Length: 74
Image: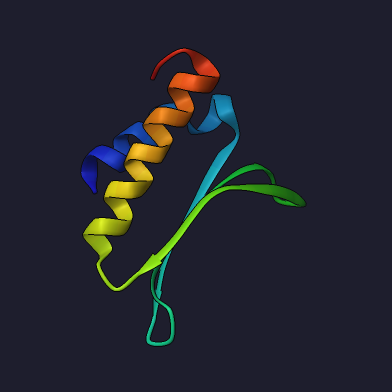
């Protein structure tokens, strides 16, 4: 999780990114990566699973690949 949060932190302002990480008994763990401002977010990635480590790992891979495609790297 630390590596994911570091990658996000380094790129959040210049790409206008936000993340939501939440847990409920109904949907388990839920991770969303969004882009935009508070009024108009565009969901780039979302995952729901009972395994937090899996959610974070998939979010990390998505963010790294998204940054490579859209910024030429991270």
